[in-house]
Image (cartoon, helix red, strand yellow):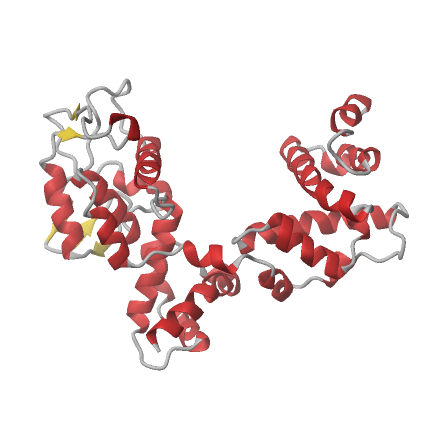
Length: 328
């Protein structure tokens, strides 16, 4: 414990007590200890400014901390941060470290937390189908076009596994049958990308360093998959991680944060919901009702949200408000 205190003393405010909290029997888990170490380095900035431990923050000071220091667009992430700080404040209360003997984190409810997220950043997480197609039209490789639109249309499945071993005969008309056993209707554009991708036997890596004279990676000529394994791969097994790496390179090259597995999937889910809704007088409650009525087909394509539908509605709320303003 002494070594731990010395290691963190220069980075934490009220380091001795926080080290005691981290080292307590309740926090033996290595991952949790690491998370608290990082969190307390983050709180130190505001604690030094106000000259008091975060467990003594008032409600208004907690809100300001969330808005200015945490500064996140993720509701779920902020909930995690809040719960950890609430636990720490309770520990501080039990050890008589709070001046007014109140854990003010208990006064912060979900509505207050939602009001603290960065709405502008939240809105940026979603991309329309039309905007995505414009980006895809700039990509030289059909397999990249297929990969991105497939994620948008919910074809990826859990951890992208349904894209790892996909053959042309999986597609009949606009229907695709996947490794997981799911059968989905897909768009004409995705079918076209798939047919071009199956005949793609050279690949231009999207790296800024290669510029216009990009080196070609040649596919295995015997590979008939829609997304193929490169011949220069050290591993004969197709891995989902290679798809993640490919998406990262695309995101950096095209300088667009939407080229990300989560962003593409969530943007596609929202687009799918709004196509199901497709009514005149948009409002929050009617969209929620549409989700509840169609929850089975939405989750079949994009995964589970029913277990925490309130949180999902809060997550899409800002973007939904903006879309309704534009539509009206």
